[in-house]
Length: 67
Image 1 (cartoon, rainbow, N blue to C red):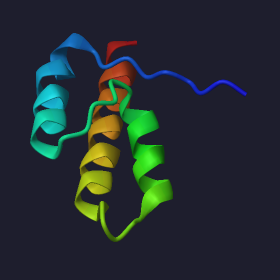
Image 2: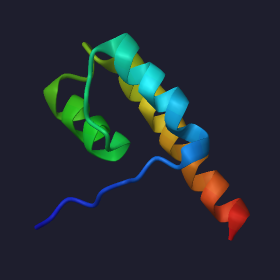
Image 3: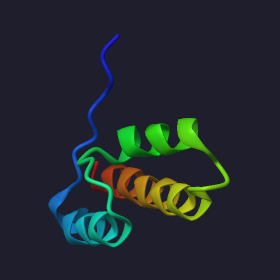
């Protein structure tokens, strides 16, 4: 089974790249990174998981608004 790739829209790219630099992560796919962090430890990465969840939600909301 292949993992779906979420492309970060241009309007959100700088924000996501800043998040990656600040946290030291390097996954260009926010959904895949969220799943990786959730599988490792909810307690250790709780702040990052919350940020990614909210970020992905905003991307999805922007996509719906544009449709």
